[in-house]
Structures are given as C-alpha cells and as structure tokens.
Image (cartoon, rainbow, N blue to C red):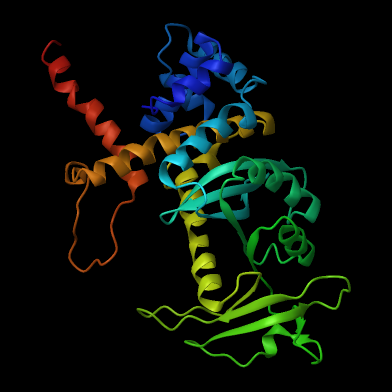
Length: 354
C-alpha cells in the first residue's frame, strides 16, 4: 500500500483510471516482486483478456505523464523532509549500474544506511559517463534539495577533477574516490601517483590543499587516505583515496562510508526485491518501471520503519539468530513482506467459504 500523502501528488497529474492502474502495478510489484510485464499482466486484477492486460500495462508505461520531475520529485521531497530536518547534512550518491544492455546513471539520497533513488537517466552507450552527463543528473537534485547541506559522493568511476571543481563552485561538499594511479602534489613537492603514499591497514592520513592531476586551473582540495583494519577475516584489498573539500579526515571517511547504502538499494531493485534485471522493457518503459520501483520501495520502507519503531517486527521476521551480530532484515524487507503477511491474514476467512 502506498503512503496516504502520495495520493495528493499523484492526483494532480494522473487521471482517475491512470491512478488506479498505477496503484495496482505498485501493489503487484510488492506481491509478485517481479517487473516483467508478462508476469504483471498475468496477475493484473482487470476483467479483460490476458493479452489486453499486457497491452494495457505497456500503454501505461509509455505515458508521458509518468515524469520523474512531475510525479516523483514532490513525493521524495516530502519523504525526505519527514525523515531529515531541512538544514541538516544530506549525503547524495552518484552511481552507475548495468542491467543487461541498459546503462543507468542514478542519483540517490542516503539515509540510515539505505539509498533512495532521486533521479536517473539511461545512457545511450556502454561504460562510464562523462562530466556533462554527471551534471545533467545532478542539477535537478541540487535544485530539489536546496534546503539541505548536500555532500556528493562518488566511487572510482567519478574521479573527475572537473566534477570536484564544479561542485565546489556550487558551495556543495564532495567526497570522490580516486584511482591509485592518479597523480597528486603537496605544496612545493613533485607530482607522484597516489599509490606511492606509504600506508597499510589500520592507517589513516589527511593531506590539506593538494593538487590533483597535472592539469592547470583547478583549486587545491584535501585528500583523505584510509585503509580499514582487518575485521572478521575480511580485509579491504586497497586503501581509499578520497578527494574532498570537507575539513577533516573523520568527516570524509564517515561520509564516504555511507556509499554502501547504494549497494543495498541496487540489491532491492534486483535479486533482493523486484528483479529488475529480468525486465525486457524498452528503454522508455524501463525509465518508468524504475519510477514504479521507486514508489514501491518507499512504500515498503516507510511502514517497515514504523513497524520497527512500534516494536512489531517480531510478527514479520526473526529478531535474533545464533552467531549473527548484524540485523537480519532491513526496514525495506520488513515493510515489503509485512504487507504481504497482512494481506494473507484475510485468506483463511475466504477459504472457509469455498
């Protein structure tokens, strides 16, 4: 079930019949955990032929009204405002993922170790994006969340000094992981690769006002170098080299460590939730399928968080497990499967009438 406040935003742009279809599709995503149009058509609760149901879904996903800016932005803005006080720091992740032949560039907000999709676009090429495309997906998000202190983070695919310079001019914080082959220079020193910095697991270093790459005309920024200590037989294969305009080592490491929330989000979109990698939709429909997934994802996360705050998650999942120190299920998982459990509670009554 979608949150009640979604309704007022959706009603502004969708006709009543379109809104009903959207609600049905979000509900099917929650119950079927599958985005393949054939699977959705097989269970779409409309009294028409299966082939007609499939065409109905295809036509709906091709609607120009399914706009991320018009439909999703007002909703996610209110979701964020209910969770994070305006004026607070908000971490924004820039990332790219590949779903079969579809190359998706996505901007997400990270809160409580979970990322929520904000804006996305399909790249009409394979491989990494360029600076122009990065600005294209970031600009709408920066305008949308102007009341927050944004810090943009990106992994080694986004080492661009141009991006760092542009974000700094926007008065935005950033932490961008660099490749070990990137060259840097401290004050009055020679350029050398980042890999030459002497570091080992458990060591953290911070360099102020370094020059990155030998290109001229760029500001000096800070560099945090961190290599996590071995933990539970797990050891990071290499250190983090983090270009940042944040003022200290602790802030840079704390912010960048939140990036793993986007891995959890992609898992929710794929095998851990909606199996988006099974989609065979056209690029146009895929963009709108991601919009439906964004609606479904937040519709699961919000009640899941409420269930945990009320101490009722024991009705949905195991709270403890021998030998396990991390929590077994996220707020998203609790909300997703908790709603299905509530629906199933009504089935025994109907079975008695069969």
